[in-house]
Amino acid sequence: MVRIRLRRTGLKGQASYRIIVADKESPRDGRFLDILGYYNPRTEPFTFNVEEERVYDWMKKGAQPSDSVAQLFRSVGLFERFERLKTGEELDTLVKEAEEVYKKHTSNQKTN
Image (cartoon, rainbow, N blue to C red; front, top):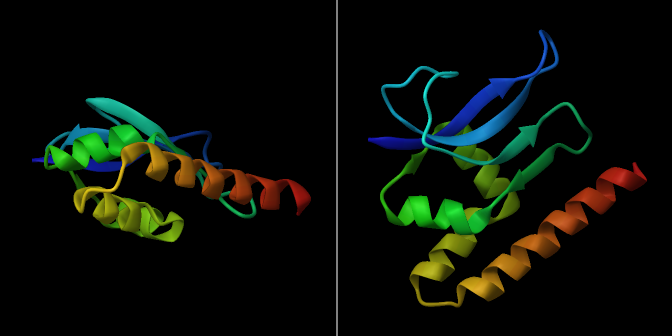
């Protein structure tokens, strides 16, 4: 089974994460198939950037997000957009909507 999960990077006590696609049996920081984005929980608000087209592609192929990644996806609305993609909405409109969400999120980050 293929999972979308977090891979830890950064120094001790200063963790940041890559969002990767890996086989379920691979260790946390071991072998992976693809890098989809990154997540940094240490900033306020957290930094989250992911290539949604590739996420949708992997999820269509059967990749399952881990619990922590699923929670992140829900917080930025990625699951809702994926459901709309499955019902036939255009991929381009969903990606543009996601870019607007990320721009809004990063602009809030710069003003704080």
